[in-house]
Amino acid sequence: MIAFLQILSVFSWFILQASDTLNFISVPMDHRDPRGKQITISYTLLQPYQGQKETILLLDDPLDNYFQQGMELRELADEFNLVQIKGRHQSEVLLNTIRSSGETDWSKAYQLLNVDQHARDLEKVRKALPGDRPVHLAGYSGAAAYLHYYLSLYPEKVSSLISFNPLLFDLQKNLNFRDPARCPEAQANRFWLAYLWQAHADRLCPDTGDGDNFPFYAFLQWGFLVTGLWGNGEEDLGFKVRLFEHSYDLLANRLNDQPPSILAAWMKQESLPIWKELEKAPFSVHGVDYDKGRQFEGKVLIVGAVHDKLLSRYCYDVLAEFYPHSSLMPLRDGHALGKLRATGLHQNLIRSFVLEDNQEKIDVYQSLQEAGLLYDKKDRYNL
Image 1 (cartoon, rainbow, N blue to C red):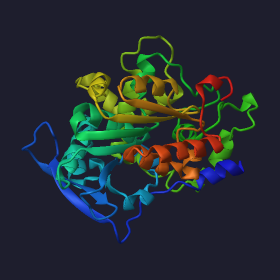
Image 2: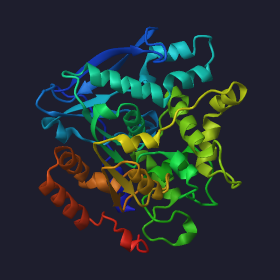
Image 3: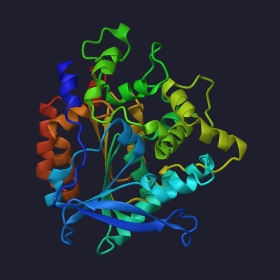
Image 4: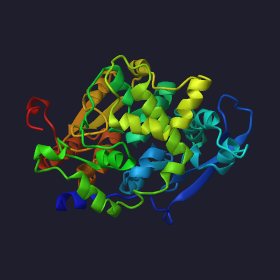
């Protein structure tokens, strides 16, 4: 339990400092109508922009923000132009438009807050930066999933992508991978999802006798130590849309008759108003065109946790196959990557990858190995 609490303590978020520059940019409220009404989104430069530096784009995700704040990358700000983009789900003008009738228009909520709109916002920010140059993308979980979608739209605008545990549930459904968190005792609620987010043991259920497991009841007792974990995400429209997108990826056009996972059932229930709008007046739901990845000439690094209880670890193996110049780094960690974060090596990993520094890559690899985090597929029976 002590080790788990130490991992909880490393969760952190960006706090504006004197060197940070907050910028605002106008983007179409609906990118299908680029000349229509505009909204304002913001992005933060963690240091003043310098043309000789490589640029790394980071993107907010409302689901990630609800359960865990983004990775701390501030140490990289001296070497790179770090650009942190706040999502359109924070735009009061957009939210007021969705609720203009006095009630939430759930169909409009999806149309204005979906992954496609966020990706096109990201491209607007990239173009607004000096030089209009290709950029590097770095993301975790739901934000990483956004970045894979962006890459499928604008491959020529991307130099490289480093993707930590990208939450791409459609791969799990389409390839019929089993639910990594099968536990009959679990109940469909946000606490279970939060537990799966943080868990990093091979087995979850209390009857397994897994000495490395942190029991669900203890997580409920100590989870308050994660700042903001129990926020008001249930009322956040962006949060609801992300739950719809993820549950759609897991449930739409399923090819087997097995009951949906507890996680999928809960996400659908929480986004049920959007599901009802889809049934009443069907609309297109956006997803990653993985075949476009085969056309990407840049490098891709996928860091996947073998103890991920949200997404089957085999999805990361398949995802890597879509990119001609990809590398897969499996780690003995959970979805939150708490063990990796505790070491701080994720920053060294990003630096060595973006700069293509082979010596630092070797050093990071050795450090991960010494920390017991590297997973060798040959050792698959000893997770």
